[in-house]
Length: 433
Image (cartoon, rainbow, N blue to C red; front, side, top):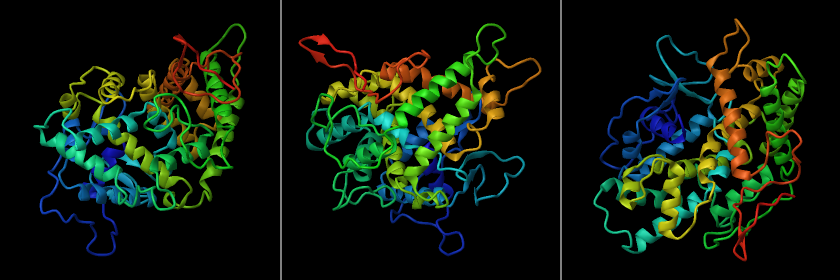
């Protein structure tokens, strides 16, 4: 389940303080969010989620305070390392009963990663929807909404993400940090040593926005991550090589995973702390929730997309159309960034948690999972990881223009996902330093 699925589940099932009455955080609204179907599994491997209709109804529920409180419930569930099962929220360490499904577990990690919001924000999705909401609330340029779901979704979006009194679990804006955009940029810089591909909302070209650029940051991240992806690729294509040179190096792959783990954990602080007491956790949770909220609304031809008349078969094309409508161009490679965000997040969450991608036998099984030796039967988890790796490698190349698959590629310095700019009418390719 993604973060919106998890917030809905927390709304319906989660107890704030199980041992202290009255147990539940309740909304002041007289009504209640209508009952929904249980999450269903889609695809070859079990990935549970609520239906598009249920998620749309929830995000457009006319009581935004109820949504705020559900976000808070979920925040505490992550901090308390609980499991979301098909019949109940279970405390840390509780086994899954026979016949039940485990939707998602927070026992080992939050399941969210800042790389997800970093990649999605590079599409300019947040700036595009901020401008859309601004235009709608101040004018009738897009016409009058005749669907309550669209009207409520716009109102809820403003309340949840663009007000100073936004939910306390996700609020990264204050008198000390008056701009949430700058707070997110600061977090991206600290964790990845990278800027976004564009400036502030009024900037149509690439450029930095004003924010506090921390002295301590993981500027080595991009070097290690691209080298890691390159080693994964070489190990994958050579995993069953029986003739010729074999450039696979499992030890190098797992060693790079450990280096990435150490680099990322260094920004978190005390690894023994709960998620809510770690550095950048609130920024991460807030950023992932915000980018997921707006990504969901263009994940299909939802009522909001239909109202704007920006229908398409691809999420990237929907954003490009909405960006054109509001006057803020989306990133030219936004489709690649959307495809990249989820798998990249899964990989980095797993690397930080440790015990899987830094283990030689486990990685050997993952790398051979799509073409296993005779009488070897890969697990669904191994296949999922390998598919995620290939997705990240392919779309990272498309989004950045950098050749991960070329073992001789000059992988060093910083890489930008900024789209090519035009000089005197001629396209200029991205530069790397």
